[in-house]
Length: 378
Image (cartoon, rainbow, N blue to C red):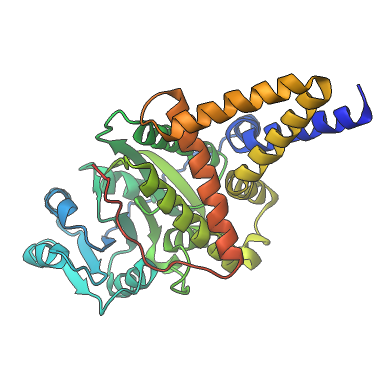
């Protein structure tokens, strides 16, 4: 083997390891670490406030309001607050009509979720703040399950488990659901060894005393949940506190969502960087492995593909040519299909490159403060 071939082999192996690191090697390391079980020696918090923001979610409101009524019936003292971010459909009207269970705060136009959540947090009276999204419904005992974790006085925040429902059988919904099951598994390993490195907005909670101040152009769910870790408290996952969300079924919708989230994640990362640098070595390992390495997955795909092609060409040009034809055909078929392995490959590639594009835009100063619900949500 020539020196150049050896170089391509090294690049290929390094690219594969980097691409697989968040899903294979990091979990293997976390499984080797000792568990840190909860010590539920104190009482559960006496009160909680449930907060969510909405924009043009009229289609989701009937199920959402019915769910809020069920949660309120089980927890009569639960305070429920909603912020409407300038919807131009019937979202605010439907929420206003449910004033017996939810207190509506109407915004003065598009200001974004982070802005809305800060308005709600300022009005919240509960000892624990529970956050969710307008299109997410909770299991009837989800609030109880979250609050039970706070019987351990070391716990500063608790997140639940999101499950996607109403899968249409298309590759986008299937791939998204599989990705989220992997994400939940990674969170469970992080929680087992200390703290989860941030929550998503579907179902999580923090002690009200730990709610931080932050600008409107960051991801509020990541910023608020990481404030728990920065305060020296544990952020844990409660596996049986369940939330449910309809799957996105359109590749374009999912690509735009990942693009927007990646851009805001980078902006948030830069904002949090001074606090991240002060975390423990274990938490920095978790954060870099699950977030930063994964953000640049498209770079590792490109470097691995270039190395594989160059190595094949150095051995026999027809191997490289044949590989390019097969891979190119599979990708082309995948982007024209909604089902099957080729379509799943296209969804994975679309997600990775949408994430990289979002990061690139954020690095160049572009950011997103508002959001639009996916039209393909079932």
